[in-house]
Length: 406
Ligand code: PMP
Image 1 (cartoon, helix red, strand yellow):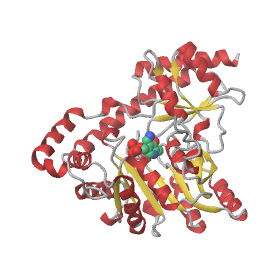
Image 2 (cartoon, rainbow, N blue to C red; image 1 turned 135 degrees about the horizontal axis):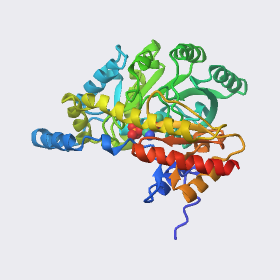
Image 3 (tube, rainbow, N blue to C red; image 1 turned 180 degrees about the horizontal axis):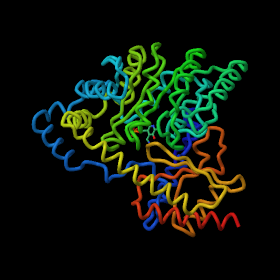
Image 4 (cartoon, rainbow, N blue to C red; image 1 turned 90 degrees about the horizontal axis):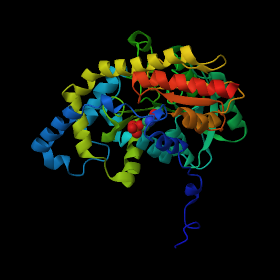
């Protein structure tokens, strides 16, 4: 067998198999009540509508849809994205600030390539999205953790960490955060903090990656209408706003986007050419047509209420069954609840017991922490299971926790 070990690049040495994927596989065993998969519910996918839209695209513009296209994406979808971000409170967005990517995950990878030299600092909330951690870790960025509070990132800790990096001759460059209904914690950044955060990032000259896949999946419009995207408070063009159709249509069409300064989009074009020449023109046309027919917008109220109900069932069951000393977040939207166990409990040991004794899965906390803390934390996704299974799964998990505590 060929020995590759001396041939792989230095970057490969730092790549890690996602603990979450490993756990997701475990959780797919039949009979398991899964709170681990971070997927949207397939029950929300408009399969019939997508079939009809696809057929009509193949009929009317089949050849163009099956051809290569522009690296930055199908122009019809750029117009849709513009409409979409304007509706989200970014009125000054423009077409030359948009790039379509293969999900927002590709945007994270490409942005890493644009900005990161090995050792450059990227600040992440503790906890943060594992896909972003992996994208920047793979490029040998220095990953620096910043405390998170119930109203979002701890600004004093961010200021402290940036200052410390500067004093140690570090190169603080990027702050990555998910301000709305964060994956994994469900926490939302308060409006007050959004303003202060932008002041801090202006002062410290940080690029801000605002990752917003869940913003449309809110449970109460009155709360969320007060929350403005960071990009809308950014006259300097330092915020790079990412979003995706994965949670509001379906992830299988692999369509996300970047809204950023044209200076960034220009370089992203170059990086993306080398990555894939262009994304799927068929997928992008399908998404654009779904928007034009109102399929995406009209279904949003239903999707919000679908997840709100599941979230409420999980919160109700947590209140009813969990023993004292266990706490959890109460998300305003999204797919996730974050649980903190008492200090002496370990979520990995608990997961083994939970799978064995209760057939209930979740994701342990440490992979979400760039400093590997969080051994007494875990993520519960309420997206996959039915309301009955959610209540049953939480009751069973609570029994396992009680057993562990005694
Ligand atoms: N960012 C966050 C915070 C996510 O949770 C996800 C999906 N789990 C993504 C980005 C990537 O999603 P996609 O590539 O499907 O757009």
